[in-house]
Length: 100
Image (cartoon, rainbow, N blue to C red; front, side):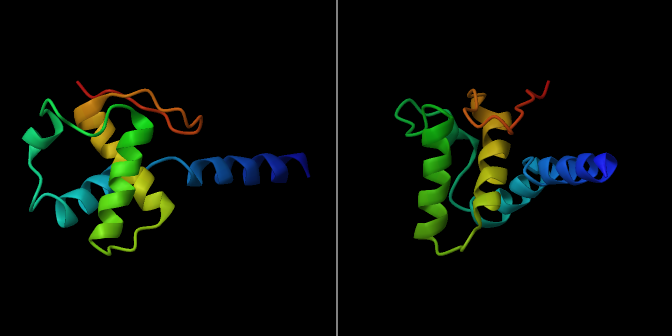
């Protein structure tokens, strides 16, 4: 029984980890037509931390009527954060690994 609980707990944790590859695909499919990398480095950027970055992803996916789930929003936020911003995530289940 303990093994079953451990396995179920491990699977539940695995499901909430962001999928940056999927986030990158969503971003390149739905966002890169209007966004290029310079938008992430401009001086007056609206994303100043993890929370505001996630809010911007949620805002713009809603504006464009993409119907993304919370998981999709976290995936795209994680992708953008890893590749452009490197903010600290306040969400304990999200591990941010900076790519070299």
